[in-house]
Length: 239
Image 1 (cartoon, rainbow, N blue to C red):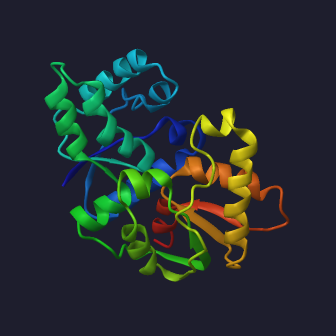
Image 2: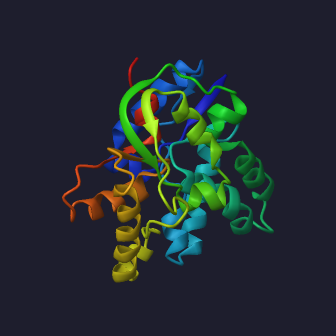
Image 3: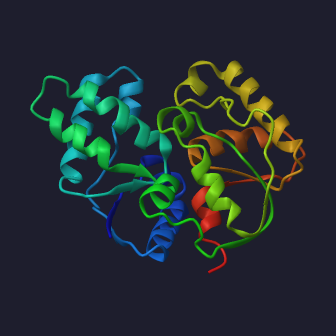
């Protein structure tokens, strides 16, 4: 199966290892991975900041970059959710509307692609430790991803997954929300940290590095040795 990889700005600039591990996991699952080096952004940052015209230009480039791709897979539920839910609104009453709709139907977050499309749940990964899982708002509310990451993690040898209280509650990042409403954002992050630490887990895992970056920042204010990990970093371990 041919898969086109979309690497979000956040991953490209700050956490490139996540992208490399994603290639490793997809190839392990039997995929032929393609990467268009000319790709840029999905357009979400400009859209969320209110610059819809500028965002549409970026989104149009995204459509061209992935024209003809049967499957587009990304290590970010946030970007996937934006393409799925906002592209049809941005391109409403335009010549690119049908292309936008088709692209929205072909883009997937990694865990849902593995479980629901490839029907792969066991990648032969092994990872020693206790972990808890954070449901990102984009993953849970925009992409309706809940069981897929947990199914994959349940097959990882040596990993014990412990559910934290209020795992579905927002961590407080929310993109520009963390900048505009810093005190509220920090308070929400502290609540997430409190619930995570109570599980006595060693790791917090999620589908979105943006959430994990915020959580990691909050962790630095505590004496906890807990670490954050993207889901794909765990799935790529041990082989």
